[in-house]
Image (cartoon, rainbow, N blue to C red; front, side, top):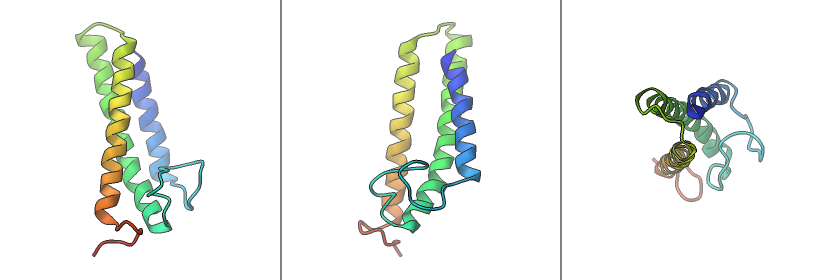
Amino acid sequence: MTLVIVGPVIILISLIFKFFPPKKINWFYGWRSRFSMMNQGVWEEAQRYGAHLLILGGCALLIIGLVEKFLLQSNSEWVTLISLVIIFAAIFVVGESHLKALFEKDGTRRS
């Protein structure tokens, strides 16, 4: 049941990130990693792509929650915890890989 609530909350948060991304590099709001904070160009791409990944992650959590509730008819905290860890780890790995594919180590855009 928890993922049925968490999924839509993540989707809502990601829509806020999508339509109101942080304009400047900061330590409070947005996709924050050492690489994403390297310069303004990397930062803007991280915010754009990260919002899309969060939408997908929220949808995945919602689907897992619905399957758990209606097909498995269970409400396991372990399913919730493991799902959250896997989804957020995947979002981070895919997002950082995307940035590293577009930008050099020094933050300049690849040609």
